[in-house]
Length: 583
Image 1 (tube, rainbow, N blue to C red):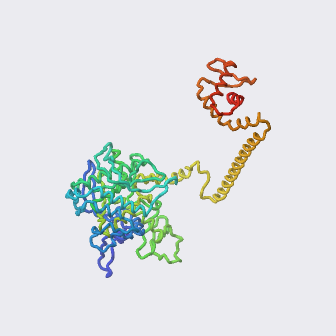
Image 2: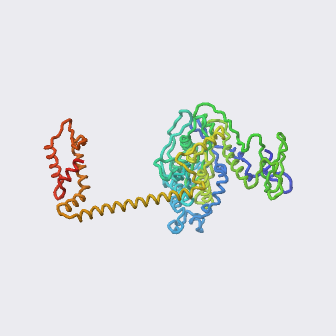
Image 3: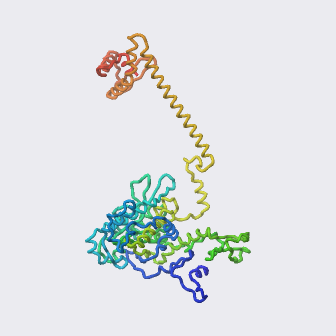
């Protein structure tokens, strides 16, 4: 623990007093003390939300996703409007926009119509904005966020496969306005929340009819006190939290940790909020009983009984831990990573700069979980970024960077969002026995998968299937040829048969046979009185109609009527019609 404390200070070059850092660059520094500033407390029914403004983006999104977003070309791409040599970019003629670089054009066209609110939201900008809201359309603020997210998605194209690898899902911005329900406790349901101005929804391809909201988008629509505006945003966060928890197959007393994001637009300024909800608090609220929090603040990454290694010093060396006995204290020494003669025979755990990234990711995740230090079960923290003015080039680039990092984080599978956890097929809480769970997962094999696609027999199996397919295709082609030959032979034999009294009528009968069968079938459907027909052993045909027998005279009359009903112009012999009826 002393190493963590010492890494947060910088020694003066003269060796005198240490100088405190404004923000620690060590990946092992949790840095949660900076959050404990003056907060704005907002009550919502029996809950309380503490809003912290102007927080760095690292407090909302893990730092590695911010670095990943910073490495994308999209963040460094300057929009066309910022290439004009003017001081105020609001005066740029948008009609002269480049025809070859249309990116973000819709953003700034919609930005022209948003209310021109000069005061920021954190400074009480909603308390005196009635004139601006009347002169301009407040709905244009949602269109700005929608166009910005669509522009980012068109370049990034972030998509993921589902757990069964049968569909592709992604996050899409949608201008959907609807009101959601939220809960504040056991059987404490409320529907007085505001409507969403837009949402980021989870969509599948092939598509689904229902919309799964992941992140609400709220804008400034009314002149109201700041407390009321923040209360409405917290109600939206609680409503989205309910959407997160509902798809999780967990009992009410084991709700996992959840986090909810919200994108807000106030005039031309964009901001992001994040609320973290510990699982033990949610379980206590929704089950109406106190559930103790037994989890460790920093879950151990090593087996029980093993000492944790010290982090790498900033000079590029790695920590080397050796144990001389079972109960002896470990001896920690440093060795250069380039020393090939280092003795590692007695080393139980060794970290190098290459694999230290895993430790850093774990600590960043723990840092986001530890930002909620409220002991009260009904108090939650909401962290807010600074407001990014989209008319300023630096703020616009920072806003794009944060939005890209947010999408990368949500689609990484590590975000604590219930619908995404269900899609990624990750359990919301770890099983009691990892070994038992692993063996159970190995036994759950799909019955339809009869072979392993990654085995070495894939090529041979494919060749075998192709051979079988070729055999079936050749057999089908040969059968079609035989049918064609038989039909041609039958027609040729009928025409070549000597005797007009047999050849021509027989040829006509062969051609008219399908039509006769269709006519007979239609005629039989119209005869509701015809119960059933059969032939006895002697070949005599009997008909049973409600227990009565039909005489031969009535049968001949019925056959004659059947021949007359077939229409004029049909050259069909009486014997053929009689044969069809008897069949």
